[in-house]
Length: 336
Image 1 (cartoon, one colour):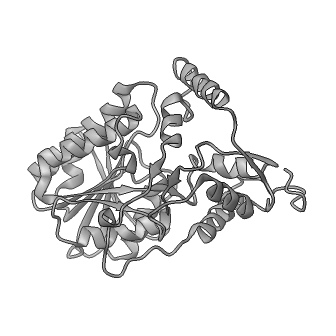
Image 2 (image 1 turned 180 degrees about the horizontal axis):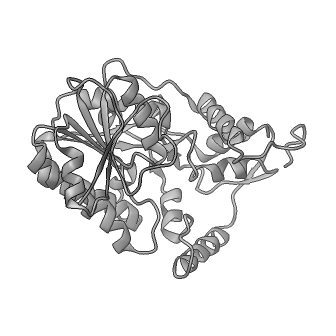
């Protein structure tokens, strides 16, 4: 059985939003935005955190996970909206991705249909879901969208963010670390385009989306450049943000990239779960992660507040304050 820990003194008439994945990179930002918008918030976690997840809101905690049917029922009961952020972004096997991203989503969607049939279900997926052939991760995200539609099509909104970056993200930190070097490798061909969005802008979009009438739509979220950026622009901007204004960008041999990715594959067979694998390399080298204007989420009162320059600067400030990123030495020559 699950147990709950109510720590919110919010008035009972305030609408309740249930959130999965609240302790993750995106989830912490979403909690702050929901609290600031006046919502009661209920989250599910395996254990009660030692420190508050958000300085901007208090929450009710249901202990459990996506495999716990009692916890799922306690999470969603009485909710006007359910925001599903929980997901697996790196794993050793295809089954591990699908267990969380498909089967966990199916269990939650079924529970919402049974215990909160009028709730708006917002599934925060990934732009990778439109290219399931690239990786097990991408395929599992598409599978999660499919099962959610099967259970909740009229009450569902699927949101596919572009590449999300910002304070607290460990996965994009590596690009800022690379950008602090004198020689900065480009991971994809020059023709490749990547759309991005700052986590703060994505979190702010959640509120108007859950307030809108669900229509079963699949939407995408980006900054003001849905057509995306070349990797050269991304890494040059990252280099400027870390104080390395004159990096030398170069394209490493494909064989070297494949060798590094293969090392990640081998590591996954043993102790470590690596982010850089052959499948992840296919995602990085995909030519078109842009978003057509017809697919963009448009909500009254929302527009992205960060462009690439201001967003990367914000991320770097946070990384340095948290001790995750060292200052660049010798910035006058661009060396690290």
